[in-house]
Length: 256
Image (cartoon, rainbow, N blue to C red; front, side, top):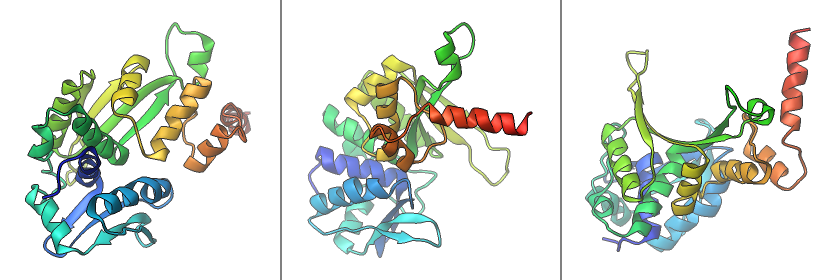
């Protein structure tokens, strides 16, 4: 067993969200082929390499539009098996007891961060009602949402967030399709709670962190942007307001 450190706890969070174990042969992790490439190259692979003292490099799997890696090392596979991860973990996955029982807030934060980087997102909404025109026109109101089809994991994450005194709400979105499972959602609403989440946990995934940085810089973050577009905004090579002008142009085109 590897000693529980914040690095290892973050890996466990990542793996609980996006990992797969096929015991006794291999473990693997896969993210989006474009939006998650930076995250895997700069965060996930270096972290796995550091903790397991083994060079891990990601690659594309174009047939599934994913980016990630396999690890065919029985010792490493056994680490995840012994922590309770199973071949069919998606609907029953829960937080390993070594994390949920920990009193170390760095361990707790690291696990949540790993999970949220893979199965969470930050997004921004327009306000409705009696607000200034800026908030009515632009996406300024922040929310963080973490989704999982595992009820156990949702309850576990809520428990850990409470340990960190981060207020949140939970709800279930039931699928209208008979073959699809309901989705358990954890939502952190509003500037104060989002800032507290970022202070105590944060995002390491550039796909999410870039949205937060744009909001901090401009007070808004346009929706439906790619990571590359957000990089340009943060480098002052693109204007976030231009995304709203383009939307207005399209509205004028289709609704003369």
